[in-house]
Image (spheres, rainbow, N blue to C red):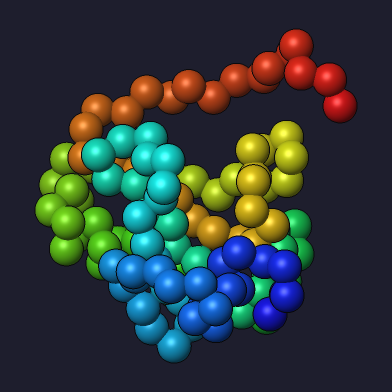
Amino acid sequence: MTEDCLFCKFVNKEIPKDFVYESNGVFAFEDIHPLAPVHILIIPKRHITSMVDITEEETELMGELVLTAKKIADNLGISKNGYKLLFRVGRHGGQEIQHLHLHLIGGDFLSEGIGPISKIKE
């Protein structure tokens, strides 16, 4: 765990948070800035900064993140019509919290909306 990490503070119960799902390895909650009717963040309890830091040792954990997304999508009734799973990686990928997390986004038709923003400077 990292002292200044918001998601680690949720895991440690330093900041109260209602989870929509929790297991020994991961937890999930609704995004505070949803992009669609369903927007859930699925997060490993162990602090991993980003996908860049994933090693083969995290193979099982990564599988748990994806299977958790499937379970939540099934429970929320969005599996039949579909949904998106998204990892944001680093600054260029739009990662805002420096703790690995998977976005589950659905509940309506979703646009792509991904492309370079050439006007933003490094």
